[in-house]
Length: 233
Image (cartoon, rainbow, N blue to C red; front, side, top):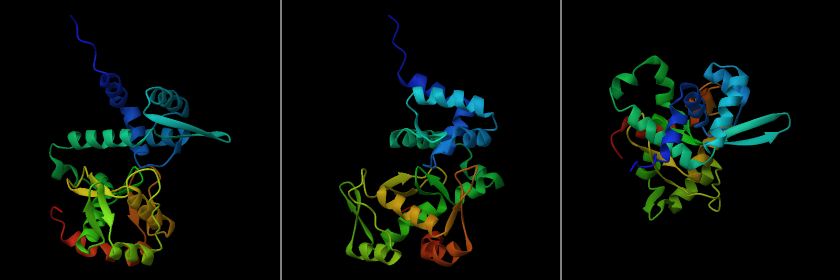
């Protein structure tokens, strides 16, 4: 008796295609993109991108939102994002240190989007810093804010919506650093704050983020100690 094909086989085949994997990797930033934007990032024509995106949507990996003349594509949900991050962790296990020394990987290693929150070296520092300063403490659901943490957020004028769907703060394994970074609605609110205040700027064709002069003056000093003491948290 033949065993049925595992249900994940079709999804794995969808992700295995180089073109589709490049588009999924870009969508892992958490931003919505048009077919044209994804086509340019993947090095294909808009027509090919539209066809590939239709397959990804049918497989439940991406969602589509029409707006005006355009359709905007995003990852279907956080489960898809976590699956992609888990695959990245497995794929990058060999020669990790050497791989991340390559110039093309440097910007991604330093700072990048991970489904709407900050990842890379800065992402790890963003978790280490509030833990070291007592702004967060472990809870049954990840992390909870302390009174000092609430004061810190108020000083930044950041108001995370605790009532928003999803957990406030929890650990997410970083696939370049092999340490946890901060995830959850708090992490998303913080990244939105950095981008809105022009402390970080997004790269148009990748998930990389770079610090602006404003970010070097306001954001990097906040993480300096955590970046220096970069051992396991």
